[in-house]
Length: 581
View 1 (cartoon, rainbow, N blue to C red):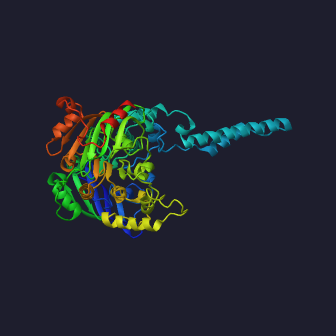
View 2 (spheres, rainbow, N blue to C red; view 1 turned 90 degrees about the vertical axis):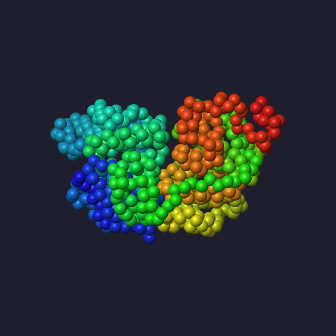
View 3 (cartoon, rainbow, N blue to C red; view 1 turned 120 degrees about the vertical axis):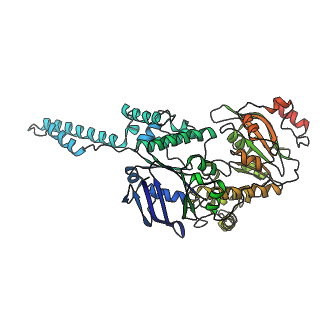
């Protein structure tokens, strides 16, 4: 089988950090190659050089056996290379078709030739002064119209207000049909689900004629059903001769979809193995460089009285629909309560409501018997309530991407010195150094903007900052999303340490195997409704699956009230008053 891409001794450095060191890699015609490695191992940097975003310090790239120098994504596009990034590069206010079409090249407008022809058609040769002025004005109007039309032509139809040509819509629709995508090309990006945005990105690179596709963490924000649809599409693309590189940390997905697996470690290429000859243990040991025990601990702790109690909570989503419907549950100190459910069933709204970031319609949120309803996050902190929120959107909501690690460490503490016009960055810098050392964060310095870090290192900064504030309640949504297996286990260990210290943890996850091994109890929600709470040691994936789809409702089956602790911190009178309000 012929190689469509050959990378030879590619090196890239950022300051003192060597992101790639003499990397070698081959991609064959019509294959799916998984690129595997720990966070910060240089996978995305390598693909960014192949797609023209970065330029290598040394080394060679061969496309179809021919040596090339790729200076920009535009040059990569001409070579048939397209990359779908982990963080989508779409304009929210435009439609899918606009986003797909906006990068296409225009035929030359030949403005100079048109202006010369217009001048010939509008001579200025009259001997009559009045007529000469009229001729000059007509020529001026004609030239102005041509220049304005040329400007519209170059900016594109989506800016000028003109509709896309039907032929382009037809081409987009043909790609959608041929590869089995589901996408409304006239729908605005801001109205799309995550999976639709990803589909738009893939169609965009196919529209440009790409036959070498790079998918960076494509399954990180997809549901199980959406992942299977994506894999089916990738197989169809492979059948049509496309060569695909998929960057992912999920070993089960690597084993399911890839033909070969290339391993990187600390910026260096290690080896490539045939997927049929590999398993999770082999791949993990190649990634890490040593034998790794794939076992998640669930330490036994003595549960305290409920720290956080939720009663009859109802919350709406951004569209005004009910996202959480009359839900009650509680978390004890030293307990990890998992939240399982199909993506989009109210997990995001639940976390934001508890953290004080979303208005609730009715119900009660109590911390040690103290109501948090209507209080902003800052006020909750001022009351002495220590609660940390690790959102699923780490760069959009959890951190300020353009700010340094040091400044992100200060986001929750900068206002402590109220009467000092200057913030103390020295303490924050020391805390950042301690965090980098404790969690093995790969970064040039504490002053590096977090957007320049790999996804796993960004997540470590966020988790580390929240835990560093010594909370007694942690709300975490998908804390290991996009992390390699070693980093994931490090996060599990951190959460378990907090649990041993008496912290109550709400763990919103997506991998049932992990939740069954890590959590003490698992709360299952379906379309915003509580289906029941089960003990993780006694539950099965099949039982959780039935509850997630609404086929099994333990509240009805067991005919007992859920979510009210026998040793509740809320008195009967308070609960009665809350219900009547």
